[in-house]
View 1 (tube, rainbow, N blue to C red):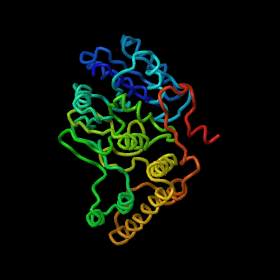
View 2: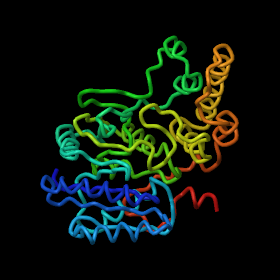
View 3: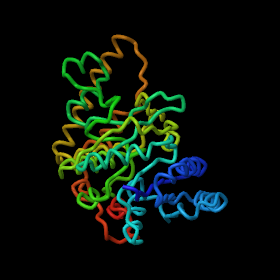
View 4: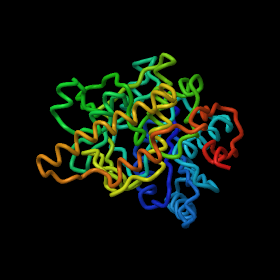
Length: 345
């Protein structure tokens, strides 16, 4: 599997995107046909021009290119545009890697991901191990969200998790293993799997879109793997500034509206309207346990500000658009606007 493409989605982080691209140069010896596409998601701050100049200045035109988009359609939309473009230029790769701009592949990372896809013919996706510069691991593989998990996430109490036998959302592994889903910050997809399942659901703006895609992959019989031998340095939260990748705790005092909407949409797509409402109620009920714990112990609340009220306002009751499929297949209009944007108009 020598033909792979790498997609980096930039939004107002040109320095990080350039560093991410430069780190890929060491993999060209292993992949003669390596192609990197840096997609700018409508930054509007000169990022696209800065990245294009860097590619030219570093003589990377033979294997890297900039792809500016006119709008900020979200993570899934930007990656989909690059994948759709790849499917049309006659050099469709065997696998497509998505690397966040705040990530840098270590030597051998892409090779390790590729070897796993070659070894496991049913693997539709394989994720790398994210780590800090000093080698400390970050969260990279996870269990799917669930009703029990939402209750425990709201309660944030170890005793509750033990009583309910709820495993931690984060999965830590030392060897390559099949897992429910992996982070989209550094993941390699088999293009055959993407053809059969579809690309990202563009009903999501940001967050939960890779969880949804890998859920759909598993439903179609593909497997998802985590490969700790593929190590990728990740500057935690640099691209989104929302959550610390090591602890999962919010970096922002208040999560944005689109996070709650994406969470709500995920549960609707996974189990329907009633399931999504139940997931919201489960978190709110668990949060009452957390509030009682805080009252009894005086513990500081390090969770997001207005978490309960924002979930009720933005994330509890499904909208009509949540029931609509926003997934994209190869061959659709490359210049179409994202579904979430069309549905709002």
